[in-house]
Image (cartoon, rainbow, N blue to C red; front, side):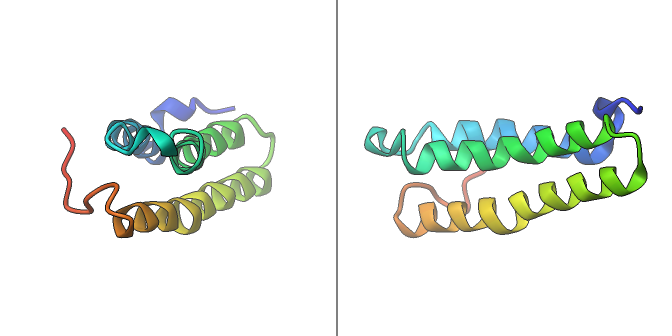
Length: 97
């Protein structure tokens, strides 16, 4: 079992979660339980699946959890951010530090 916090991919996923949480603070409050909630669940699932995968006993299991994390980031989160931008809730050029 490896320490997921040492994985660069997990570190980046965690950093992305922090950025997304800051960005979604600016979205209208009426979307708090709709789009914002969906975005936050998607971004958190990336790091969570990486962490869970490190606790598995085989490389194929770990690989499966990495694929789930990739799907959350590449498909789900990407679309939700695009939708938020097209609804003018966020700016895609927004830089959070």
